[in-house]
Amino acid sequence: MSADASTRGPAQGQQHHGNGDHGHGGPGHGDHGHAGHGQRTDIDWEAMADTLENAGELRLPLLRTTAARLRELLGPRHDVRRVLDVGSGPGVMTCVLAEEFGDAEAVAVDGTQALLDRTLARAERLGLGSRVGTKLAELPDGLDDGLGRADLVWSSMAVHHLGDQQGALDALAGTLRPGGLLAVAEGGLPMRFLPRDIGVGRPGLQARLDAVQEEWFAIMRAELPGYTPAVDDWPAMLTRAGLAEVTTFTTVLDIPGPLPAPARAHLHAYLSRVRETVAGSLPEDDLSTLDTLLSPTAPEGIAHRADAFLLAPTTVFAGTRASV
View 1 (cartoon, helix red, strand yellow):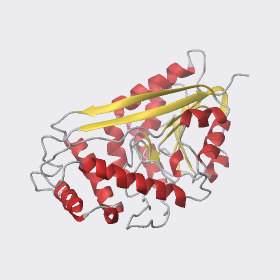
View 2: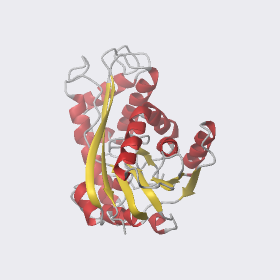
View 3: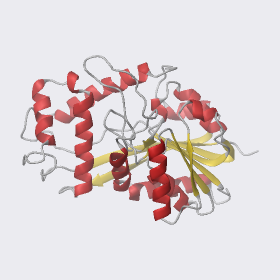
């Protein structure tokens, strides 16, 4: 599985696979099958590697803020020796955690070897190679396959790609040493990047994209092996996993227009994946609008619009294992 950071949905390989850099959490690069109404729920995380890494780069300041907040939650007396980034994607957050916890080993756990290779290359470039490791593990089975103990477990946009979310949280919490912290980035509000009326097609395009992505998400969840219906009450799920002092915080990526090239590339990748996965659920006029937004030459396209912005919140839920 690969997940660094992204809101949930067929196109959020980020936000918030993981860490806020995948934004897309995932069950590896496997295929969930094909949903009804022309919707595809298969995700090839290796093919999304550039997109995931770009998403993580965009969020670097927020990822560092998040890592600092996790240190605060652990408290000054907790000696952090080992950190797990579960569903790590290309490892942007893995390296941020290694930087924040300078005496710890940071281990990226993912089901896509190509993304783990990117993690190691990134760590070497940043001078972190001696403290960043990787573990190839498909989730959820990999949760029971020797992850080892940790003082901090981070997982971004990965748990919702597992059929039994509560079981996954139970397993992640079980890896914590006494006083350790489990933090997951999940749920939250959808990304916003265009005004309601963009001068092309009907106003309100983003609201309609939200609706079809919610349908995609429900189908994707229902097709997962071991799917167990559950209310997405993440604090309650962390509490049921045996954690205490459960808390929630949100960071917001806020890039005003005119957007820099990396932000435009991120939005183009997002819209491309929407076009690919949920085309069968959109009316023809909205498909035509999407094609205009994706056009590299159209002045109304996302590559050139002066009114495009990027506003993307990431919500983190965290809880602590009781000290013995």
